[in-house]
Amino acid sequence: MSRTIAPPRVLNIDDLRREAKRRLPRVVFDYIDGGAERERTLGENRRAFEDVLFRPRSAVATRHCDLSTEVLGTRLELPFMLAPVGSSRLFYQRGEEAAARAAGKAGTGYILSTLSGCRLEDVKAATTGPAWYQLYLVGGRDVALSAIARARAAGYRALVVTIDTPVAGLRERDLRNGIKELLSFNPLQMWPYVWQMLSRPGWLASYLGDGGLMNFPNIVLADGPMAYADVGAALEQSMVSWDDFPWIREAWQGPIVVKGAHTADDARRAVDAGASAVVVSNHGARQLDGVSPTIRVLPEVVAAVGGEVEVLLDGGIRCGGDVVKAICLGARAVLIGRAYAYGLGAAGEAGVTRAIDILRTDVVRTMKLLGCGSIGALDRSFVDPPAHWLSRCETL
Ligand SMILES: Cc1cc2nc3c(=O)[nH]c(=O)nc-3n(C[C@H](O)[C@H](O)[C@H](O)COP(=O)(O)O)c2cc1C
Image (cartoon, rainbow, N blue to C red; front, top):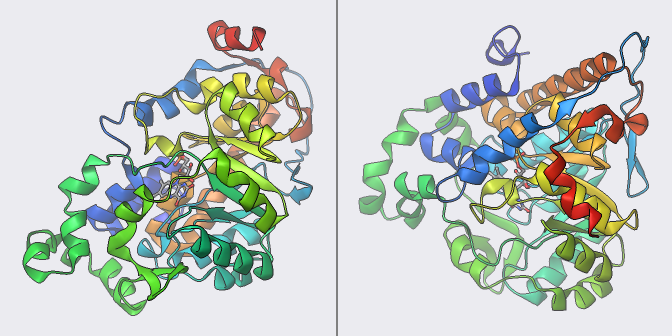
């Protein structure tokens, strides 16, 4: 393990975040770290986990903890998967492949973003674990259909349709760091912001060694793969609506996961649209600032779908205790986003592996302290959520 991410220097995810900040140019680090507008939901996603208190069972000898679970019929060795994180190739050379490889070695799944810098076939080939493909309709229906066909042929097991991105959120840090100017590739416009790269020679060497940037090889337009600069505009023209689900369903045929359900109503609509699972998600607080933290709305969504489909959750997970709390409140498993993206930015595959190890060790310790020997045995009796979080469940 490289010195930068070994213990005791890196003991938790916040330590990995610090190491990512040291290695990455500010514009890249803030792209990972930042949230939308005033970043109120960004803070709340994490903080709200503190409102859920544990109710341990003491004097229960738990020598072995079984962390395995089953999601959409696939066994995972861990109760968390890696969420889709666009442009991971900016964080480390061949970033999506590195993250997928680390997930597979740990026995868990990886979800590839449409906005990947690596070809979806190469990412699938890099991992021994299950892979899902996350769909944006960037470029329109025909472009999406061709990506869906490629994902199916490559062996992706589920299609994740993200529904919370009708427009890109306002991420102020990106604008202040000159992301638009840097992507203009106009030397005069770029110049005031280039120092961010020059001050991170390690990252710059790896970025240039990887071919420099870059396009989106899974969004193939009439004139070739979509260029980096087009993303914001393309997202605005590509919103998904419930009316799109029939043709997506017809094209894909395998399980569909709806990512971004945030209310009981949307979760029900996802079930009616044919989803096999929903992800309670606010896109890591990068879209609508001021929405509830995800852990708070989890009980409402679980009650609304009534066991008809599996419920996953993401947002704010930075330690194993957070994973356990979400499972106690009804999530089948969780997705981690920034927790592994920091690891990737800090040290590539080794950093992602370190993030996974930190969370795995945390989950085991938390479960032993709770007196619970398996993920399947975790339930609401192990936690005390605020009573008002449950009030909506009663009316469903
Ligand atoms: C840098 C970054 C890029 C992301 N890109 C995507 C994406 O392309 N598609 C998507 O559905 N979600 C995307 N997300 C959201 C994540 O999939 C996930 O919902 C979120 O990161 C969970 O919150 P957490 O980071 O607090 O764990 C992105 C998140 C981050 C941090």
